[in-house]
Image (cartoon, rainbow, N blue to C red; front, top):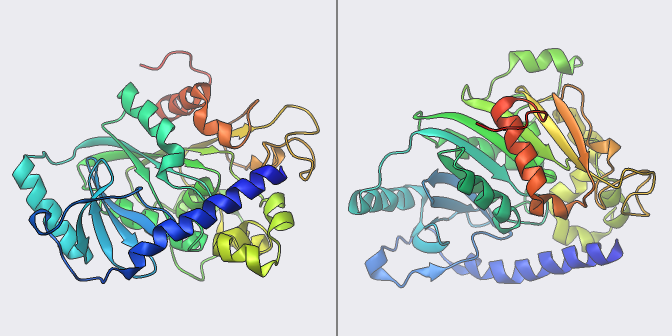
Length: 340
């Protein structure tokens, strides 16, 4: 388990130096394709989050400089500046390349803590290959740079930027991504909002977007992360790399959980573990997936809950989990054997 932790710290540390170079760019400097050589990026690490998707194109915001960039489907930067400038360039590209307006159904995937859209890439590709959705949006967000509330605001903005011709939106969240979606589906995105005492009743009175369909949580720390408390705690050096979200999953969980209700749409939970009382980590009581306790993934109001014999990261590499997730999103049950 310590090796997993060291890997995570090294990953975030390297990501910091890879991403920090983008901080030197000045916002408001709009660059068209004929004004510079397109820059290959890694799709958004540490500072960048998606705020708009159009087919495979997407606009990202840098949460430190509040500048924006337009990326194509190969993560190549095609414009940089303000949101309006990037959107204008995207409109030009749509006309130049004859891209049709978006219409149909979509699924949004959110990665976990310390990752980016590359960590959920296999799931996104698998869903695209099944052609069960017109659009698969593999959203990046700066998981170590903002609070869960701010992540939820970014998700809300991204959804609001989808045209009304996107008629249905399903959601999949891995680990912290599931908690971000849960916050989005819990209640109004107001800084001081807290969950009413009757959480199950409150969910009936909230609808963030009428197009929201179903939601699958993969390994969500629905009752906090014991490992985050033990390995991060109040250590100021470690907290430099884990940010507000790391605190919220660990030492500040009591405050965060006051804003996390029962998702207002049908949802299901997939957990990892070994099916015993030991799990993958000696640091977590009972069964666990190496990061989150199996019992700690459970949440009142879930339509379905199931455990697979996998670790936390393995969930994003396991086709049976992909199939189970898609089955619920399409039918509302894990039990169906055939997806039409």
